[in-house]
Length: 531
Image (cartoon, rainbow, N blue to C red; front, side, top):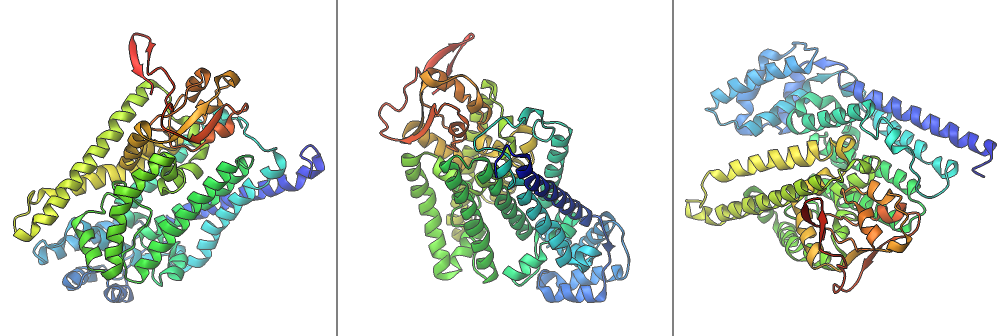
């Protein structure tokens, strides 16, 4: 089809419109499923809870006894039902002498609410699965593909600063609020979103033979988002082979290593391990409960233990020496995979100011220090527990709890992804990821990777800086013909892909002479290290 022929544009335009309509319908069905129906515990439901094993045998009799008065009561909203369940769990905890911890009560609350949910999400799960996830995914793909015929290859502005969704307009803020609310519900109030989680039951039963919990639901949705948005990336950057291969790589690692392999291992009763997830990003790897789980899992558990140590201590930093942090952050990492696909429309929102750079360096290295200190304390307690007097006593679990809450949940999840439409797609990678901090230190001082520039060809269009998701003013370097070796650079290569003159090149070479800029320049009244 010729792009300039009006008749050749008719079918792609219609397909694009149908795709958009299908996506909207799927999204509406997904959102509506959350509020349709009600909640009611039945004798059959209590029996199913007892048989499911989701409630510990030590707690089951007390919990079920306190739930019996709720049988047959109808609750229209999740809030009223969850309040009644919390009262029952509180009474059960008193009967058990306070042995029910906060985490256990939260898990019990979720499974009880899930069993009690009534309505389309419970009775028409497969239909809603098709009308929400499948329809929205197919609609999005149908919306992206016609650009192959409607637009020539290559990057154009596409009005990114005039789109309400992509430039912090009303729709962008609404999308940010939705994402933030989703993560808050997922991490802290899963019982309130059981209807959404039930929608993933068909996929969960196919892969695991059981119902979906919140983590399967999240992994499924996360992977689906990357797969669908990878199509958009392939269409947008089809003129650039590096982007096509890189997108295929992050998609492969997310689908296989982050989702399918851990899910199947968990279904087989083995440790559900993501073999590409390295410490300190995988901050709980050295937690005592995880070490004990691995040691009790036979040969596979011991292999995972030694693999995780080798990956974190040897493979990750050594690969960074040869290829920079891009080999992990832009080719393997699941966080980077979501940022590079789902987050790509928002990459231009990253803050390019020097003030943001100062905050970035303070935060990301602060998180790294916190992760290292926490891990040292955890391991010290683990190795001294046999004496009956752990070195740091009961403080360890508090440190783990607060790190998981502040860094693992709030920073990496709520802010890291929820703020895509508000502050760009790499907030977590740029400001908080401790593994990115380690890789960045290697890249800055010892790596063979750099982005070389040809200042004589630069026309100062600013595309490179606009599209830099890490907030680097790439144009500043390009205008001066200086190599970019910033520790924050994840080597995504988009700056080179959007350059109209081929000024930028991603290269690996000898470390000698890779930093070819004047290390200190006068800016205003201060001297800023731009290396």
